[in-house]
Image (cartoon, rainbow, N blue to C red):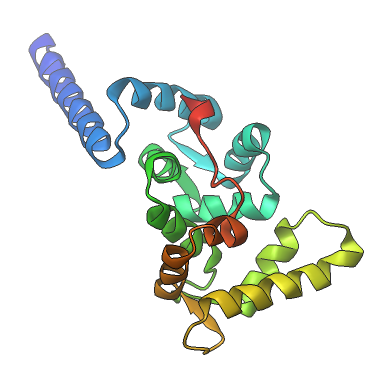
Amino acid sequence: MPPAEKKKKGTKAAASDTAGVLSLMQKSGFTKAELFVLMDQFKAISKGDDKIDRRKFAQAFSEVVGCTESDLNSLFDAADQTHDGKVDFREFVSLLAVLQKGTPEQKLEVIFNAWDKDGNGQLTQKEMEELLYGSLTCPEEEKAATVHQIIEKAFLDMDTNQDCKISLEEAKAAIKASPELIKDYFGQNILPVDYLL
């Protein structure tokens, strides 16, 4: 390829990369410097690949944040917007932007959608039970009673139409009325990501 064509192609790629960075800055609220730090972190986690699989994602987040396997799987599912079983840099940044810079409502939506395993926009008692059994760190002999108590209280607090399902709208309304519920039902520290920056 002649040098002029190489230069033209390189300029086009650089312009595309610049546009991508500007777009991510605008959508995520991260600065250019923060995005470059996140890009380095992403490359380290992915070991040079352009995507992170569930295993690498779990390793990276469990080492730093100490989430349960169930919570990590839910976060991965929330990040994997294309449902291809991998998280690319854009998806990675989108998740971190919501978790670090998002409003409580945005955080709730990400976590709610991750918990909503069948994607129907509603949490059932069965979905909550499966997640709670996987994420609770109490003694095994106390787990069934604890899960039952949490689910009973959650549905009492949030299932306003009493259809045995919690919709995102019901969850948002309950959280708006009692903001502490987001921590009670959706995690004690909605994954702070300051450690990455």
